[in-house]
Length: 599
Picture (tube, rainbow, N blue to C red):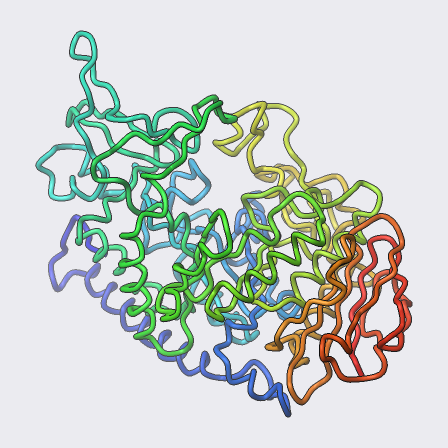
């Protein structure tokens, strides 16, 4: 990334940069050597073939929201050294990679998604040296590191924008999307069109110094970059290389569908009504998912593929239907994102066996054989515990969600706290809201604070072991005394240990790693049942009762071509569900989950 200043060649600062580059090269070389090593000894038989796949095809990726994961210095905010302190836990859980939400320097208007320097660490999270140590320690725990990369916009404090907003003739003025706007009564400047910000109000902000408006899809302090300027791509790819050279495995690409806007700045079609921010509902035809973005992603994929060690691009891809994900893979060529997020399966609000069945089969048939990345929880959505729970059987329902996530075909994303059943704790007063969406949308939209509360580790203090500070950036939920890692680790039947067993089974079983999916008992509207089938190994049957009543399941396994005579229980919720003959009807308790091997 280019800087706005140059130092004399012999200065200490220049020498420091040279040493930093040398250190980064050593780190990159080490990461390449490590990344080519397997996590564990290769399985025998059919699993050996699956083991030869790229690591990410079967990965469990764990999202860390760094402000809320672990505070190591007692300031009430999580940090990089705190993440390093918890690597033993992450390795024991069985994750393959961690995705760290933005930890770059930032004014923190949008808690790191407004970046002012792409090649450093925000002091509240630590230093570059801390990051390098975390990377080294993560390798020792067989954990890869992905960073969040925000390519759509910068902070308005970024030196590029400060320069761009100073003059129309500034060298970086065209790094952003500007327009003269329209003129109203008395020559008053008006936005050029009807585009609105996701955080409320017009998506255009007037800057008197240049007598122009700049575009911001998100908060006004997050001006959109102009990706039609080749210098922007060059600079942003340079920022990505900075981290790849240090040894990161890849990136989760934030808001990647919004890189381009209509060059004619046409008004968005109105859909009628208003959103939680009070703005008109618009179709976003001209500000989202424009075709030009795919050219950028193909070049980005070629860039990361030039690095050894299985580097990875994950995309934040909210699309209306499953087939719309296919272009993000690059279709049959598979030359764009390896793992665009499939949010259609897991980010709904209702347990619906028929809908889950449909979505899973769409992912099998509409993506040219590409690997889905299933998402049930992340830092932007109400937790699955609250979206799917009924208030009475929440723990059982959480086990259904985990079983679906970890036994279906695809890579899996777990968001911190999901594995212990953390709940959404939404602020009750607007004065307590931290999230900008919650501030502008209150009370219809109370923001995303509720799913970002600190990780609940233990009962060692009132901060659940997250921090020694009495004042954490968000309050610790009151249920931490029963919902925490230490308590659940000691309980063999806890939700945490349910996740651990599922992940271990997924890693060791060829059918769960790479087997095809066969839907069973398809007419059943209340129970989702499927088999994972791989040649040369035992078939795995998964049956999930998504109703509050006992259901009777008929596998129809022989009609589906499955061989064997009996199903041996591997995991069940509630515990103790017995195996059955392959042709017998299976009684499944309310919100019961059953995972079995066909023998």
